[in-house]
Length: 201
Image (cartoon, rainbow, N blue to C red; front, side):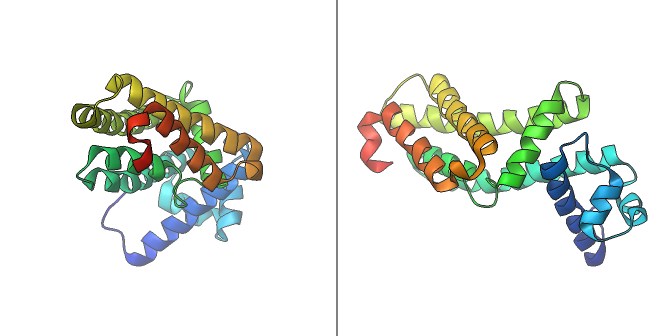
């Protein structure tokens, strides 16, 4: 989208994007229409079309913004000088209150479910996942080089697999799996993987 938008237009687009999150969480991608998004945003369908033209463009922009929001959160973890702090920071970012909400998880899983059939969704999801994995793999490589430990690539893959599994449990079971409990499970898993550093995790 145009980066030179007025503050009013930026606020309106944010409002519409928030309505997409709400709508997809409640109706899934297939049940999401511009009319329903407009109703949830409290605007006319014409306003939605003015800002995003088509449903596909709106959904793609939503996915871009969600990916950007996620990137901005986990990127902060890479500022830590100790690689162990970078690894644990990346794990904590995955369960941050800004990212790990029932509605946003529903949206992520909806897009991932469609990624195989929709090339644009697939490209955005794949790019986001690759950048995030490279950050975790780099932090794990530095951690093993400094502190010792298992194969760094396997370590990174195992950590991210646990997060993916916990996200899926939270998505399926809702409030039965709380965000704080899921984070603690992820950190307990990390302690098992790195017993020599468990006291610091």
